Amino acid sequence: MIDYEISSCPVPSEQQPLNEYEQLKSSWLFRDCSLSISSYLAMIAWTWGLSWIIAGPVAYSSFPPHKYVAKFALCGAAGASIGVVLLVLRLFLGWSYVRDRLASPVIFYEESGWYDGQNWMKPQQVLDRDRLVVNYEIKPIIQRLQITGLCLVVLLVAGIATWQFL
Image 1 (cartoon, rainbow, N blue to C red):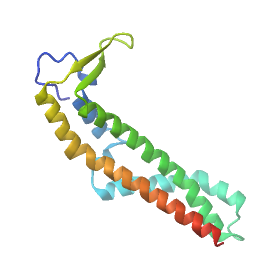
Image 2 (cartoon, rainbow, N blue to C red):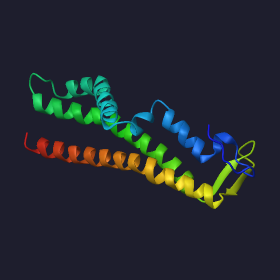
Image 3 (cartoon, rainbow, N blue to C red):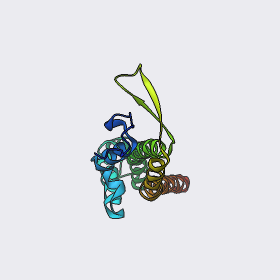
């Protein structure tokens, strides 16, 4: 964990935004977002593939593949995409929360429980450091997630358009 150099920082270590960022970056679900594009795409592909375990039987019961191959494939792919959408949404919300905590000049923290929340104003040097982390580490991850969401919307529209011609 990274502690603030400012000795007057009253925020507990686990609630300090930079430490929250480090924890998020090293957690198993979020770390692939900060690695290479191939690791990220592999995570998306695995999620989509595993989602077929649920989407496949549902699509099969609605459109048996021996009669409706294209409709089965489109229905199964759309259903499996729900898992990807939920994953991307969870990743986006997690990274956005940490981004907002790092970029904010005031940090809300709890000393011992939910009933005794306090605010701490970051010194300028801490604020500058945290905003550098936002701009160079978190912003590219959020942009990657936004592009993924846009691609999912485009694929959904393409699937709907294809469905209309079947």
